[in-house]
Length: 382
Image (cartoon, rainbow, N blue to C red; front, top):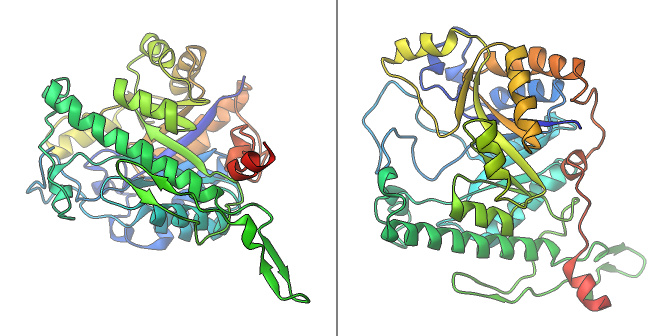
């Protein structure tokens, strides 16, 4: 069975010293050309999709607010806007920006992602992200969040905060999904002879009234080409696993090894489970960058350093444990991305487990997901 492959794009790579590599392009991080070039490289390798990182606060090495470091990349562009710019410069690869649900409004995100689906011709997705950082809440002034310390994540008070964030996220996703369905597929008539542009009977109020949101609808954007753009979420533990099971089409997980992957898979019911891996496809690269940074780089995901052949071995081992795909986080950009597309992909093709060409023009199609029926049409028929 073939595996699926994606890459997570963030700055100049996932190592904090990657911007100091000779082939890095730190001066171009805030240009469209930079992101277009990375996405085109990923598309040249026929990857399923790319994700774009985002957040509501500056990057920081501290969990409780901005740090004082001046030797790491700080600042980023809006992920949805990057994806919208990349869309017309690519033709097949899926585009999955991160959009934070905490502090933002589902109506805005629903129409932004629907728009991305239109400008990409059905290649949009969404990485749902919650924000539990107190300093990010201070940017909006609507609520006060406690500092969540990593070592106290299982304490009852902390779990209660995390549970509420994900409960809110579940309602958020439900509102977005209903808004995507609020226009029936044939609501637009566009008949100049009769002067009818839309059939108003095929636009629906969603009338969502919950604990966190009250949204009447309908959307201002017609139903997206995919019907429902792909919803994805990163999950590390029990609460986000439950969120992914109820709200996402695809979950990113962070196993330490194949045995751990098997245990995680048993807890998830999403159609696709992608394992995240930070990758250095040069055995000496991470050590060299750690020396440059004068620290040892760590990650929430497992870190791989080695050859493309060794990485292929690991991917197939984890695939046998139930992982359906992988989201590789290049330690260095563009170096490790190029090694993924020009060394790893050919190795996987040689082993008969990765595509030679794109089989579908939509992201859902690439992942073998059907275009879902419209809930309001189903309700009327029933």
